Length: 119
View: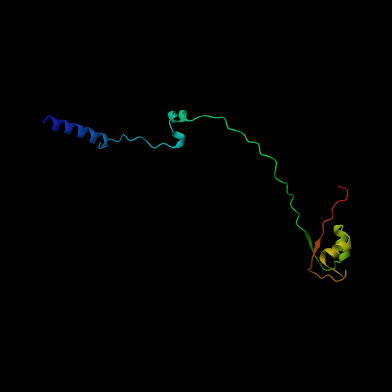
């Protein structure tokens, strides 16, 4: 009889420990920012290692977009060349123009870039 009574008492303690209670004693869910200091003390605090980057990257200078002039009524290839400070021969060669007098209104003329010789 004592053995059955002890078994009942032990099983009631086990069932009580399994959360069979109706009280609202559950701990609140904490985010990383709200973690107790106890957990933070367990972390090893090390000073951050600073790694200097090695200068291996090439400096890329973008190519400027070509300057384009749209021929207006009354324009001549000579006037266009003079207004941009480009030799007419270079302007004609850049645009595949054989006869300087054969340009048309609305035609797009690519203005070549002239490198500065002083550099």
